[in-house]
Length: 570
Image (cartoon, rainbow, N blue to C red; front, side):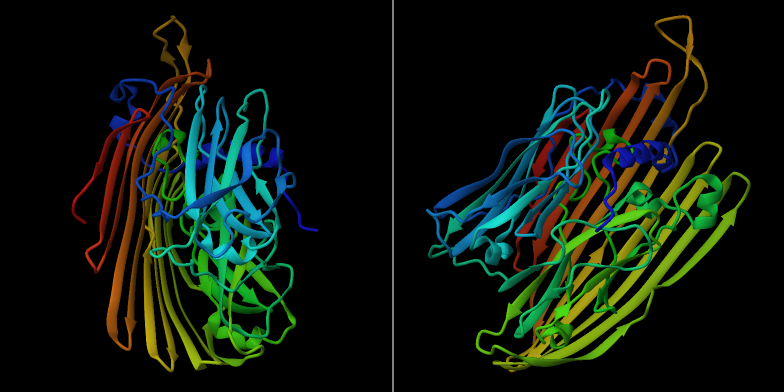
């Protein structure tokens, strides 16, 4: 039986960590001064993002409801809302598109919570909820889930999980709506492409409390796979919610900080053999660092976290034997605990019931090359973390279309620089990850090469300060207050290029950039906010080599959108 953390214990840990996370980083005088802010923000409009809406089909559609204003009061990891899904009778398959609409509302006081949906034990959605206002907010996100068509063709059990805690202080009950919309096919909307088979790995979260790998339940795969992908969701918790702001173990233990250092790697094992690695994105959720940073514009992909996709096609020759196989997961430098789950996406040979193949190359070192340079004084420290690695896997499969060889080359680079001042509880953090993956597929039709280049820059400045007693404007008594100023810059940048037999076909670039600043000043005497304010912007740009351009810029201040423009050029 898997060890499941109790939500009450997590909340106590999270409250203790609030001041520690606030160690993220240095403050300008204008941010510290309450005179730089003109008002105390008490409400904010519903969350808004600059990401493009889904381009939905215009064919007739049917809706299947999974949850309608479903309340999540006190609910832990082991008490999800469950039901049975049935395919829509009025819109039989094939479908041109299937869309998950996920929305909710919450009022009062509450932390951000993680929401997850499983259908037929396959995880299909993960995101976080926003922190509410006293009067309440609502939010909505959408996701193309056409890839799960093999599961949606028949009745399936499903589960929606939103672990929540209700107390005299944290009063916000979260209400969730979830629907699936099925779009029929038409002349301009053919049936959506999808894997032939979805193989769930767990059906619930797999918790990793240590740095040693943990195995999921063994799965039996078909004997005729020609392609295999792992889609993986992963989230760090407690100190590891902000793993990229953690310090080396010795320093962290001596000063009551978060350990493990700033580098994390998710290792994926197939039958005990290291088969691939994932370097996680530095997510910041809607309560992260300073909650006024994210009102109403959240950090990158906070409401709809996509899965990491790991191509396991070179290994299909080793798993096409009809026997059970085991996927395992480990977190390098795990500081506290992580949770992971995922699915295997399988394409099968359309003719042969059994295929043969072989893994020809598996060049993956046991760990990345890591280095740390540090300068430590009595009350301050400077840390520079670096990591790098390369991965190469290759294999072939003899299928009905002939021999197909897949070769995957990857390069990874990580840097992270932190400046700490423990006297004033200040820190500066700046880091980035770059990942380049080139996949070559060679068969009778030639060679197709797809290269994905990712970059995850992040910078944070924040502090947690108690400057001493100051005179209250409403009385002659002095009052203590804490000051929590913060700035965050975060980006997701991806370029995808494809070529066939050396001829370029298409190049696409996505750049999602969020900048946010906030300050919170709260009286330690009364518990009320003296200053609470933030402003932020998001700039989302998508373009390709055909001339496509989507450039959406939004900005907000004091919880309200002040700028919303579609720019004509990329």
